[in-house]
Image 1 (cartoon, rainbow, N blue to C red):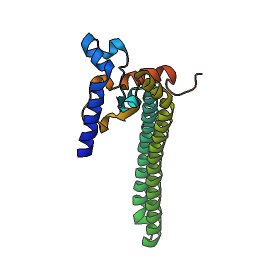
Image 2: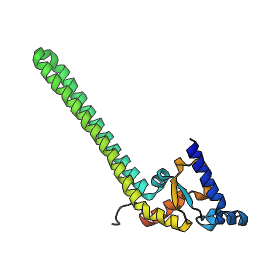
Image 3: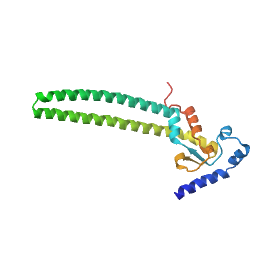
Length: 190
C-alpha cells in the first residue's frame, strides 16, 4: 500500500510541477477550453473508453443480439425437451422396466449434452467479447499515442490504479471522441 501512495504522491508532484498546469490555474481556463493539458502523466478509464465508444456500443449490441437468440433457442429446446419427457413418462406404464430405463437414460444423456452445448455457446460469446476488446485496444494504440504526444506525456495510467488525480489529466472522453472519428464501430464501411 505504501508503494501505491508513493506513486500517487509522485504523480501529484509531477502534476504540480508542470508549467502548463500552473499557467492554466492562473488563466482560469478549463482543460476543455485549452484542449488537452500538458502533463507527463495521463489517466484513462479503458472500460469506459470501450463501453462508450462506437466500437464498444456495436460490440455490446451484437452480444445482446447473440444472447437474445440463444435465449430464444433455449426456450425452444426446453419446450421440446419437456414435451419429450412427458411422452416418455406416458410410455412408462406400457413398457418393461429395463426398456424404459434405457430410454430414460438416453433422454438424460441428451439433456446433459444439450446443456453442455448451450454452455459452450455462452463461453464462445465471452471469447468473442475478449477478441473484440483486444482488437479495440490494438486499434486504440495510435490514438492514445497521439493524445500522449499532444499532452507531452510519458505514461498513461489506468484510472482504477490511481489513488488521487485531477480531472484535467483524464483523457477518456477525448480518446472516445478521437476513436469514434478514426475507427468508428470497427466495421469496414459498406
